Image 1 (cartoon, rainbow, N blue to C red):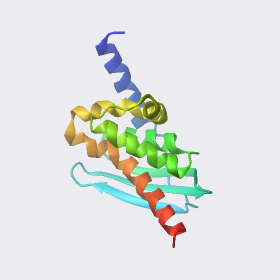
Image 2 (cartoon, one colour):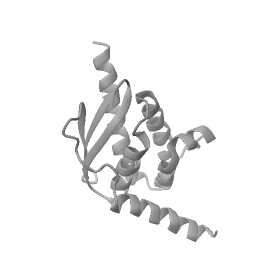
Image 3 (spheres, rainbow, N blue to C red):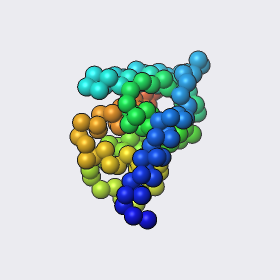
Image 4 (cartoon, one colour):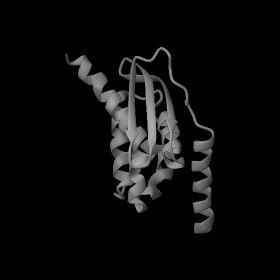
Length: 151
């Protein structure tokens, strides 16, 4: 497959995630919630989750913003659902590394799955915040959950 066709395939997959978002509704019985805003671009994300036994049992969100932030939120929600909180944090660190243009190990690529579709954002520094907002939100939400356990 030619590079242009491959780029079009990636673009189509990202558009599909943005136009047909996964888990794009707030959870009324959420045990955790967090709101983030990207003032540079105008993106916003309200993330809700049910975390039981250090596992992300349910996740939902309400988001507004550009296609990249919408696709990233959808991909993130699908990727972390059912995962241990520690794994979700590892995924977030790998995602951040990828968006900064750093090379991922094969294990990190496997861990991220479809999230690697957003690797091209590293070529557009102004869009990195758009891509990472949802991942920062789940990282912070999980971190708050872990801090509460230590109190």
